[in-house]
Image: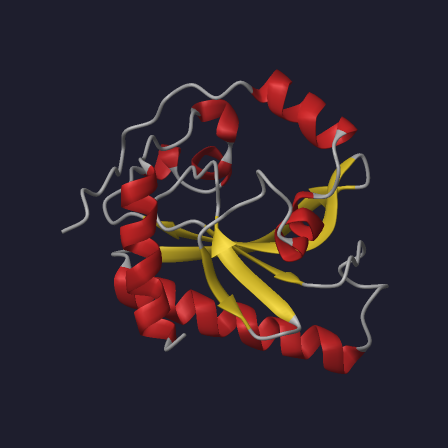
Length: 168
């Protein structure tokens, strides 16, 4: 049984993180290429898209979904068909997250910046049931408010459950 880590957060070194993502290579392209040090718990790889557990989750069950090619603009870089295919994957993965992780709401959003983490990616973040209103929405998503401490074993266990739900 997974030890749910709802409500427990540890400080996150945002300054170090910003420096790394601004000066480093694209972490999604590195993951797709299998570069050393880029390992994540991959949940789905359909050849065109990849879904994986977030390395610095602010909520238990945080998943990222991205197109495998390096695209940077969530609107301009997609034809409608490609965008809709990506959204179908986001929906499928979000349904799997909701089936595995108790949540009262699921946040879906595309974040990133041309200054770092430019590769288009969608965040799927399940809000734990009973989260006080003042701790929801942006507050729940902000790493400045800490990240969930979890072990590689906990991540692997959740990933296995999500893969089973996805049938992958």
